[in-house]
Amino acid sequence: MKKLLLVFLMAIFSLTLFGTEYAVRITKDGEDVPEEFWITREEIEQAFGATVANASSQGITLDPYFDSYYIPSEIGLKTMIIPYIVDQKLIDFYAEENNLLPSDEEVEAETDTMMEMYTSNPGLIEQIETIYGSLETFKDEMRSYVYAALKAELVQNSVAPLTEEALAVYFEEFRTEIKNQYETIRARHILVTDESTATELMSRIESGEITFGEAALHYSIDSGTAANGGELGSLQRGQTVPEFEEAILTAPIGKLYGPVKSEFGFHLIIVEERTEINSLADMVSSRRYNDFVSGYQNDSYNRWLERYISENNFDYVILDGELLFYKEYAEAIGTEETANEFFVEVAAKVFGEGDSSAQVSPVEYAVYIELSQMLGYTESIDYEVAVRSLFEIGEKRGMIVQMMYELDSNVPEVAAAYYNSWLEELEMTFMNQQLLQQQLSNYGQSFVDYVFSTIDEIESGLEATLEREMSQEVRADILYVLIRNNSLSLDLDYSPDWIEEKLSKRLTYMEALMEVDPSEEAQLEIDSIISELEYLAAERDSQSATD
Image (cartoon, rainbow, N blue to C red; front, side, top):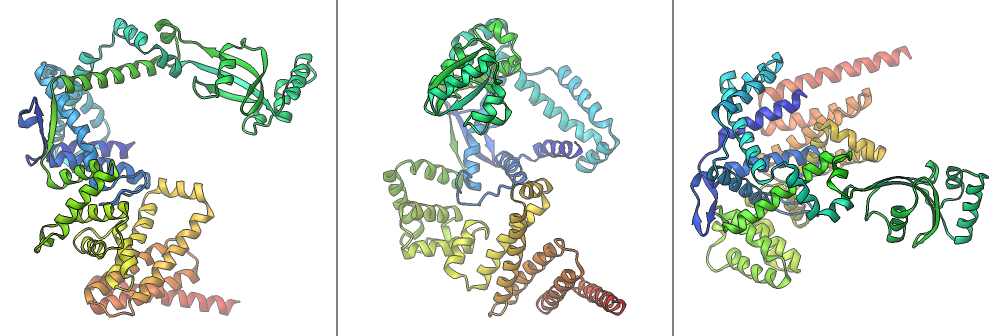
């Protein structure tokens, strides 16, 4: 709970960091709206950071430049975020235009309530003062947060009023969708391959010779439900094949029904409960009424926003060059023809006449590479040049490291970046206890084996790399990766033999590091390692003498 509250405190704190460097300009009927409704770079970065943090907590890492399966790149995510921030700015614009603003008294009362909640915990007070410097500063930020939340609530109530009349209109307009979503059927079934078996089982159940549950256990070919008496749980319209759905919607409650033929075989069915939604009154008495109300508010809000944007001809212009370029790329790859046209433009920019390389950004190289892969142009020399250039000027992590390693695995700097990317993935997993437990739960010993083999491969790969010629700076970089890798290995096994082996390795790395990047801290660690190795040796000798 404290961790969640701290995250919340940091989120509020970030609101104070907004500057005035605009990344997106918003227009209405072709004319600029006031700048207060434009989007700053900092606002995009804040939304981006929150999304990345959420992804990281689930073990998802975004590549700086390249999409992967259903995971966008970092630059792609920033581009995707923009329309959502635009929507929020338009909602703010609507609130200002229609005076849907909370009063000072309302804001102050709600702020006091929240302050009382936060300051009732002495531990939280200390955290607040650490982050904000004082409770008064925190209260000022809380006041801003409360103002925004109350304003959003006023807009919500204006465009999606929670009245019986509005709910009734919504119900009638979306009756079919609501029935499909909220009507439920609890049923059990027995599935067999032929009609004669189904008919025979039906007779035996009706005569009392065997119960429905026993028949399901011994004769049903649906292995997923046979063991629990054929129980299917709560079903909704559209979840089953048409023949089965018609049967469970019409069969008498609590009565044996069938046989019903479907593509899977023949079913015997007992419908235990059926919740029908034929009116708003039925919905009100349903256990899912609150879900229905939330659905009404969200649907009404979103449909209003679409109309508001359309009727007022709102639009936006991306001012940030890289984000605009990536948006154009994302739009161009819709068809092969437009992708090829855009590729020609990008190639002219990246490899045009004259010395244009100084003006080419990492994103432009990345898009050239991605289009080359998409369109089958990876055999060209320009593709290789683009990969090398992006590795040189861009972030040395993610897919570009893999691409570069495939080209130049013998280059020490490339090998260092390649193995470091492996190590960072392991470190991220071990830093997140929830993710670590999830990996262990899902993969068990296979995950443990993967960790040990990866650590060994990093160690052997980089030790081999150290045998080559390289600058002192690159050698130091490799040694630092080896030392981090060694730290991880020391945490995996506490047996004396393992510890002694890994400490001996660490001593070798630290002594090599002292030669290229000497420091007092490194010497202190060397002394500490030597002392610990001497202690382990003495313990081993003592144990041998006792044996």
